[in-house]
Structures are given as C-alpha cells and as structure tokens.
Image 1 (cartoon, rainbow, N blue to C red):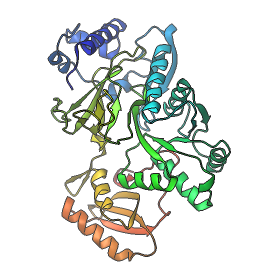
Image 2: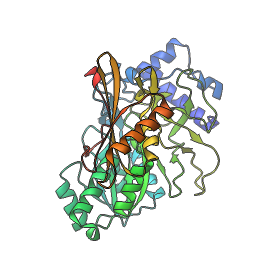
Image 3: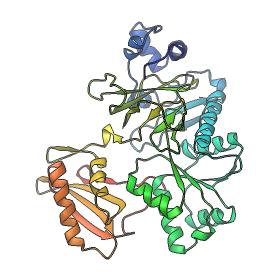
Image 4: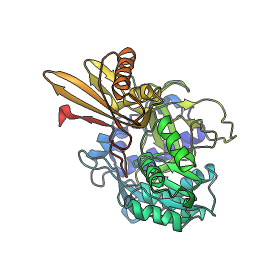
Length: 411
C-alpha cells in the first residue's frame, strides 16, 4: 500500500502541528530540517517513533494540541518503566467512536443489539472504547468491566446480551463456566468482538463452538486511539483498517525498509488526523502483513492479517530463536490437546530448559502424548523441551490477558 496524495497532505498537517508544538517528534523533524514531504519516498525517510520516545515524554510531553482542547488522557497497560500518557481532544474521542462504530457495523452488529463490555475501564483504552463505539451505534451497552464472573453471567442471562466484548482469555473462561453450570440454553449471545491479545485457531474454535457465536478480531493499541482501528469481517480473512484515519506500513524489523504487500514484517502506524498526540511512523512491534487484493465482502478498506506475534516475543533457548506462535502451531497439530498452554523457561545446572504445559482429557495416555509433542518440537525447532500434560482446566484462566510465557531466568 503506497501512501496516497491525500494521506501525504494529512501527514504534512500533522508535521506542522508536531513542529509548532515542539513535541519530541517535532524536535526530531526540526533537527533533520524536514518541514514537509511530497512523495512516498520522502515519507519513508521520515524517522520512526518508538515506545521509549513516548515514555521519555512522560507525563505530558506528547501533548500537541493546546491544553484547553484536551478532554481526556489514557495510558498504555505496560507493566515496566514509566507509563505512556496519551492526551485526547474531543475530536479524537469522537473519531475513535466513529471508527469503533464502523467495527461493529462490519461485524453485522446493529442498534438493536445488547453489548456486554467486559474489558477494563479507567486509564486503559479498552472498556470505554467498546462503550463509546456502541453508543455511537445506538446499541444498548451493559458496561460490566472485568471480573465477577457470577455477576457477568447473571447479567448476560437477565439482559439477554447478544454481543460479548472481551479478551480471548476471558471469553474462554466464560464459555467454560457456562458449560460447567449448564446454562447454555439461557444465553442469547450471537457474536463476540475479541481483542487485546494474540490467539490461535484452536482457541477460536473452542470459544466459537462452546458459546455458539461468530467471532470477530478487533485491533488497536492505546498509542493509536485504542481498540477499534481495524476488525475482521464475516469472511474472516484479515482485519479491515480505516485508512482515512491511519496509514499502515509493514517494515523489515532489522533494516527498517518497507516490504511488499503480502510479506510479513513489523506493523508501523501513522495517525492521519489525530490532534492530542499525533504519531508518525510508530513502530508497534506487532508482526503481520498487508493482505493484497479485494476482500470477498467488497469493502474498499485495506486488510491487515491477524497479528502473528511480536518482535519482542522472541525467546532464545539453547542458541535457537523461538516465537510462541511456533509452539502454538505445533500444538495445533495435536487434536488431543486443548487450546490452553503455558511455556516456562528456566536456567538449571548451567543450561536453559523449556517446559511446555498442555491440557488434555482423561482418555489419552499422558506420557505418550508428552513424548510425541517433545519429538515434534525437536524436529521442527531444533531442541527438546520438557512436556508436561495435565487435565483440562488445570492451567490458569484469566479475566484479562493470559500470560503464556513465563521466563524464570530473569525473575
């Protein structure tokens, strides 16, 4: 996807605002002597912005609009270092709601739906983003927030909620609880809008089958509005993103150069109309690709493939680079195991060890299954992990994001 003339015009407007406000990126541009761009080559020569730049700007160094126009702040949910504070103007909040409304519409959700929102509220962008979009759509919102599963299920039954908004981890937890309590016939859910963490096909199938609902992947990050900048359609072949609000590039994470459409790389996002804290060429560290061609749904909006992982997810074990999604793909080849797994990495007796915990039902020989999984990892990745098979339900479930990789070497 080459940047269009209209998008270049929008970027130039953002450059003006950033330079005149003296924000970190404005200073970068000033030092580089860049006042405007006139081609895609110029755009690709603009400097990247990184999460550390945003942290260094704490607390309000990203504020590009006058303070009288700032109506809200949000913060990223990162657990390390200083948080990133993103200021929003009233227009930013409204633009985000418009994008989110489009997401619901893409999923076939209407103002007659009842939307149960389970992600967190507060500084995090999730809950309030799902809510604003639903209100913009004119649907009834049930703003539960996370946790209190008894109350979630009670409201889901009593209010006859038709749409569940949640992380995949919490959707699975709810699906298992509904099954356990035998209340599936009292649940009216039709669709699930799922975001905030990468999830595999096996988990998707379990949630979809156990709840009997259609699932839609939603994409977003706090630095770029929040969830709602893109969503999958009913054809489930990538996420349409709103290229009148954001411009997406895919780069080779090592060289920083753009890769052709269809090739995997790191997602880099530029906000085209944001006022409170515009970002140019922001490196997300998410790995994906632009899907070329037109979607069978006929939407003119371009598509980003589902997020395959993060450049910073990589684990180094015995000199081998491993990504969690490689382990997930191997486990997907074993129909006996559930969607849940956990990887623990430790350093024992001078060497690194990877333990993989998987769940299965009681009808399987645990030892034989562990051996077969270990042998497959060895043949496909190059080292032998310790595999521990446990009964379904023993691995932790989460109301937020499930922590699947625990690296004990650095604890």
